Length: 619
Image (cartoon, rainbow, N blue to C red):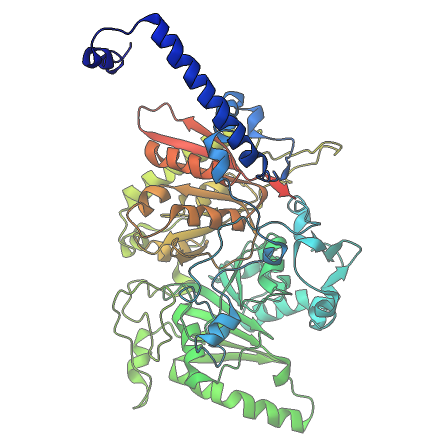
């Protein structure tokens, strides 16, 4: 219906003018347009058109499933939205990791190793662009084949770095024309890996490494993990290893381990605690990890003790301690005596020593700390601090926690007992209902999206049909994991996927519960970049995260750029949130070239799904 405003000018100006006057005015307007048009056309012609990158899309595209949505989005993107689409960064940022700028850290005064630590506060402002893949980047091989062979162009490592790596890496890792290949579990393995794993098991009193789970060892923090050699073996034993290593501009252990599809993240504890709560891991492993444990008055060992559960093991393997004759033996004793003395101060018991491997066990008796000599390390005042890059402490943590339970007495696997749930402040009924919700949600995801995302039989043009259980999704980052319900549902469905369960720093701290279930998890502030390399996750899942962050200081475009950085080309994002948050997310997704589809859950709520795919973009 015509607005009354259309008629108002005539009521103000009086009677309608004669037709001749209207024609004269019309001619004048046409003349004015012609003059302005001839002037402005030269201006527009002088503007260089913005080059549009080529998009190499896989054959499984959401547009095949949602043609109507794509037509709508394409219409918008060709209109006003086109002007705000972001471009690719320069080649120099192909492996860009924010918060790890060594030169800027040195300029800011950090030294003694702290310049290699994480300092997001130093460089908060960064160029808004999309981190491009390397020139010869290829989509990773399907799991589990991708665990044993990766494309060499996908990681930043030189031949010299490979040749200078340790003997274990060189014997297990073969350089081919365009791949790094690793010996499979069924093949001929380095003469020490299986023997080493079995040796560690026997040193803690087990018959073989297949008994780790029965002994309460299900989560292992692998410090300085090489290229995931030991971690890959632990995965084959159904354990959950998490590799952490310092940031490396090239030859990164973390980048290569993640490219193999193994759990890893950038992390060190030179001056700050790791982003894990006390009593997090059943075993901490260091094999030639390059850390001098006697430095900083033992604070590095205190940090290991903080994250180690009661009855857990610290495994240290170092060739420097291998005795070969009296001189080497003397060197060994001078090197390890301070560590052995300090371990007694923190109630560790050296339970075994064989060749160059030493294993300590943390006490299960909380009263041990009160019976130590005068002048021993004090107990921490267990104030409930968020375990997020806090300064290292010189006191013993976790002694007053209701999670002080020996690993041998804990539930094995993801199913915690009612008493353990109550210890976490969670009602068993709430936990059960949450598990039911995620079982149903995962079935719905599979039913709705299996042709395009979760296919257990992915096929590319020209490929033969692979045999199961090959999967195109190897890992998932659950950006707001709550109890880890999505991870548990995937395990129950026997999906060959591991999940990095992230708990936002200002959300309820459920990370201890997630870790006690034997899952990979970490605390993170989503207003900051995540400590990983580009293109390291196949799928991102965000349930309620956007609504949670709406009251934070986060800039949403920065969050989406970070998600794009850590997501591999042709990777997927699933948002589940309220309608308003989903509409905002769809607009931002368009700006970074993601293809997107909104799905109505048809349950009468304002909850929606937004399914996005990152295209394979090159210039």
